Image (cartoon, rainbow, N blue to C red):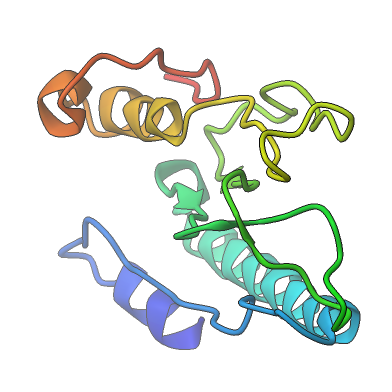
Length: 153
């Protein structure tokens, strides 16, 4: 996080900084590992926000999480979960409208053991492309996906 803040503090500006937190691919012993990782994520975002607020850059910063796959809701035989289709994503920043978007997961309506997604991830990407970057999301995403009302102008 420190290096990201140093880069963000550069008066020349930077368009994107990518940070990674690996280890969520937990097919076994998931409770302890996820507890530790989610603690690291929380502490990292809190530190990032505090530093960006101090720099006066929180309102011009968008933090977005993404994952390459979700997790199945049912625990496997190793106290873990296997790859699934739906996941949760977070947006943070001074222009983010707080709240939850999409329907809560329906654990009684699974698709072959997988959660059904409430929002297509491409709608999240469309939101960022259109409302943050001012780009035509249809060209980037090869189709039109409804943007979420998650970002203030």
